[in-house]
Structure formats: C-alpha cells, structure tokens
Length: 86
Image 1: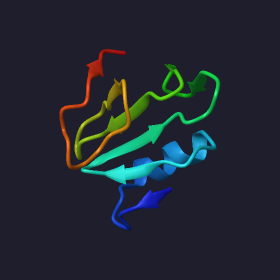
Image 2: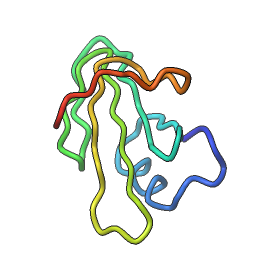
Image 3: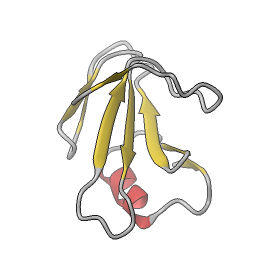
Image 4: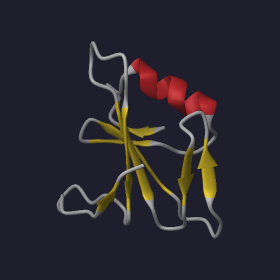
C-alpha cells in the first residue's frame, strides 16, 4: 500500500485480502490493472480488465463501501475519468 500515511484501517484489511499494490488518493483506495490479463479482485467480486482502475471508498460511520470501475487510470489533476457502474 502506498500513498498517505493516514489511510484508514479498512484499507489495510483490503490490502491484506488481495496481494496488489493499492494507492491512497483523494480519500479512495485505487488500483489500476496494468497487467496483460483480467484480474478478479476478491472479496469485492470485481473483474478488472487491463487498463481499468478500481476505486474503493468507505466513509467513516458507514457500514457499506462504494466501488467504482474507471476506464482509465485516475489522475488527481483530471477528475473527468469515465465511470462505469459495477
């Protein structure tokens, strides 16, 4: 896990559940599949095609999380990434 040292505890749990490198960006855990094959992100039940970015957030006090699959990598300077419901 890389990024902000103040990332929430749920991100550590997510990182331990799947051996990928999560980034912490704008209050979300983000991961871009840069590999050549589709990845299955468990326990979230998400299929991530090559080049797609997964963004996960869990607001304090909430009992659920939000998952977004973006068609291209998140760029903090450009928030106009295409979004597709999961």
